[in-house]
Image (cartoon, rainbow, N blue to C red; front, side, top):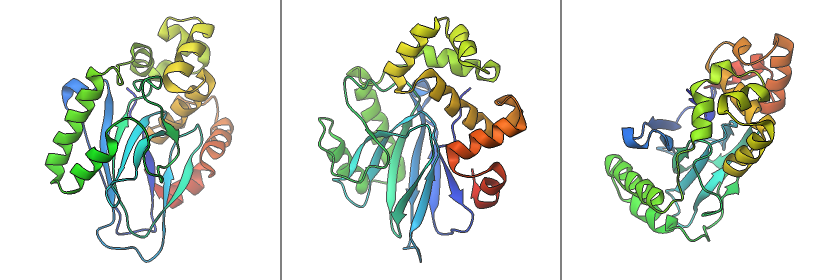
Length: 246
């Protein structure tokens, strides 16, 4: 199954607490993880957050400013984001293709502006700030269930088929066959539901496979792997392993 690594941690930085929590069983087809990223005390220097492409959609809550929240996803390449010396974010990482963009628009990259959309994200954020982590999770689960009831979150049977046989996918043609769609149908469905073309979606899947295991599972040869990895992350695999933990 698809188990994305949403970010990597710089080995030279201490004092940043990153925690993940699994969703309840009835939301496994919608949510990948609940996430918390915070600094208990200010850092001596700005923190560069290395966000990896994972094809997921996120709701981001800035716990230091209830106005700063939103729905976002990344591109097919990694991004390094300056979070400053003191921060506290709560995120919900949704599986690719479940967020209905026609019902609620999203943005790209890190959220750093006040939310102006129609969802009650600022009210939720303000509520979360004063809650214990266990209560926060309950609040977020209830919110996700409400989004499901409103049709903003819908399990995606096409991406579920792809993720169930991810180790057998080496090309867009493989992906289309597993999804039981023509190449043209796959192009339309993936672009509509994930925002990615099949080619870019496959690039993200290959990168994530390489982070979780043997690169040969995802790439034709070692030189192809190194070239694609550097293009996606800005580092060779060796440089990345020396600088980051995933």
